[in-house]
Image (cartoon, rainbow, N blue to C red):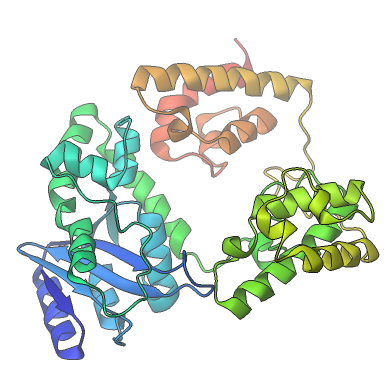
Length: 376
């Protein structure tokens, strides 16, 4: 294992990766400790070598990202790693084997990296550093060793899982899932909701117009406070607490937030005065309407027939998932089921064209689903 902390060593790493047929990759960031997330470490393993690369030295990793983009990559939970590398370096991989997705498709009960390392390599990986602040310097030897092990065993794990996937005829499933992952994590168009209405957080869809106005006021304050203190937003005030406050305050005009049922300590203590002021501001602001960003089929609303279809589709998904010994949500998402129930496609081609299903999912689910939506 080598720690890479200057340009000369980085050039050697790039040269070594260029000659390698594959690379295992992992990233460490500091989103649990700071408002603006930074890439703090990049770990890369190739045949016979493990590298822990420190971009905070600073190092320009553009050339390294370019080399990695051309390789067959192995990652665990690749979504985060691809997104952060894409954000900083425009990274877009060509080929990915995601061991977490593989574990889902194989129906593993335990899908964490430590679980896979134990199962396939007989190695018990430490979990002590999972919440470490990777932006702190210097990093001690224990943390560096921990980081290196995140990629060291991925090749052996992926080889074993690949054999299992081949045995079940599901390797193509993984390939399609990883191709879709690459597209989703590297597309330039962000979701409209995240861009235009970031305060519409989980749980806000069911709030009243007055509650939404209060929530928006709370959200903007929380972001400013988090930025000022350089802390993650959730460490200032949890999202579910903001939704709870917004709903309660809209129904209890003028009451002190300390009367909120189950109010956490920071609501009763350090944030009390600010929150009371913000609730008052929210009451003075115009009521808001939840902005639907994307409807599966614009203008369509579920009727009794589509509701019945959805219930039947869920039952069939459950049955097929049980036969395949995988989780129903891995087989197809609820959004995909809802789309089929609403649209009632009349052919396999129509199902493919909906955008929710990969070819392997159409192969597995297409005919049973058509029987449900078209009738006997």
